[in-house]
Image (tube, rainbow, N blue to C red):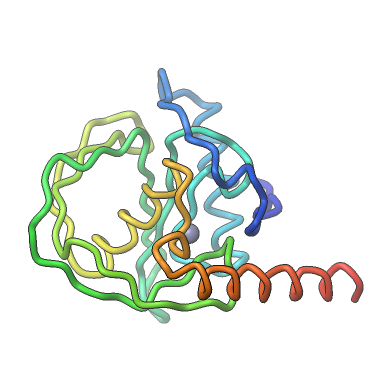
Length: 172
Ligand code: ZN
């Protein structure tokens, strides 16, 4: 397992549309292992492959709270089959936009289908933080970052903040 660098805005790779995985292989699992290690090290609760520069429809997640045992989840080729009309705001953050948090409205429940770590099909309804996180991560697969939902002013302010912090990090 290797920790890979996480791309941050405004890196144009984050705007790329990711492609489906043809077959779940050991290579796919090695990618997911690296993604999980990278996410835990950050630390974060979700990561899409494109955030480490790999344009494939692969997501990892762990929503365990502090003190709970790790509960990694792996999603290959996730698709939302249904959602509900009710929207719920959640104060979202993103490893590609460090230290920026904004309320984003999303459907509060979604019916999701995906392949798991072993390539088995799973179909289930998600709600709460799980629903928020999977929709946020699936946006990454379409080249969308959560700040794209904000006003231009707020978005530009967020990007500036990240660029400045990255410069300081590179210098220091
Ligand atoms: Zn994100």
